[in-house]
Length: 392
Length: 229
Image (cartoon, rainbow over the protein chains, first blue to last red):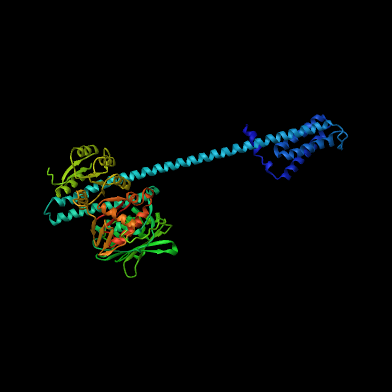
């Protein structure tokens, strides 16, 4: 079908107007025909005057729909009869032949309106189909973009994993070789011994930094490698303390978590990194032989769990409480304690990625605390098991 | 070669790492043989008997995982996997395919030697079947299904007891979440890690001195658990 024709048929919204308006318009069209035909009646045959009325019926059929068209056909015949057929100004149907005019006009009107409704339907279908095609195209494009994004993320994570492998391999050699030198050579002098230990510790320190950087990159790479599961927070606290044992030889760690503390939803490896960084920091900035205490409690009114780690010592500089989480910010610039300010900013990135928040505060009694908050959410239900007496 | 000393096969492509591992193992009087790739390793494994295999997962000529599954088709040689990758999935797959333990690089020599010793101890043929285990102040009698803590009876639920049983029978081995879930609840629960975590928490609360800093029921983050005496 010709598209232009289609638009002429379908884009005009007269058909959707209220019925009374369409009837009025139909009558108006017939009126116009009368006004045009009266002056012409002296020059035209009656047949051609009928043609003018037929045109107006065609117009009404196309534009206004079936019932106005029928109305137009009837009024046209009446008007024709009234104004143009002698005796003028009367409705006598003197000649039965004008019934044929009426029937012809009705047939034309009905035929046209019938086809028109078909056309309109087809036009609407075509329009809907076009919209569907567009929608499909958009969806497909979206899917393609998604795929691209996924491919990019896959690439990024494979680069990360290759990088971690390539950095860890020489670090493993360095660490292991320094240790093995102590094994093979007896009676090393104190100086060499200290050098070997320093070598090993520095290698381990680099490894820790690499872990932090990789974790940061993993976080920024987005959701792909993020593995959130429901689990008890004490489990990951236990592994962190164990991992950090070499750095905690001078400290005692006290953990205080209610036995029935609800499960929280988090990525265990990332949360382990949070505790490792916090513990390492706490150990660095608190006096030897002091106690680090970890405490968890429910803030039911806020639907959150609060986890805190407190240590003795000087605490954070009062004007730096906000900035300690900034990348590469350190509490005390002049301090001789090694480390870049990567640790706390990673803690914040990880906690925020879990929908939580983190802050530090100094204690009135000296020392400082780090608090973080995680949403409680809706832990999965556990099936309950009938207790047995153990001699089942 | 003296047959009295355990034979260790080290499969590792990085010469410096091979070197310090050899130094460490020889300091304990182990007999060490080295392979730099998959093919060499398979050749040696078919040629002679070893007591333990130390395997780097990232081999240049193929996957360490393939080597594990090939080896497991004819042998139950203890396998200690070494991995420098950040990806836990490799370690989990290695363990599920039959590796006994893993170490992340970099690792300390002390840790490495301890793991090797533990695996060798496990693989030694038992003269008598033990069903009584002791750790800390806990005494477990698997046959009588009785658990004592400092002489007093500890009540365990059937699932807790079954879990304890699995841990005791697999002392010093890493058991993946998937393995434990399947053993305890069957195939349909392999994705429900939280069940397992809650039961391990119960066991720790009942049997550890300090449940938040466990000495026996250790977590291998993202992978599973290890029971260690």
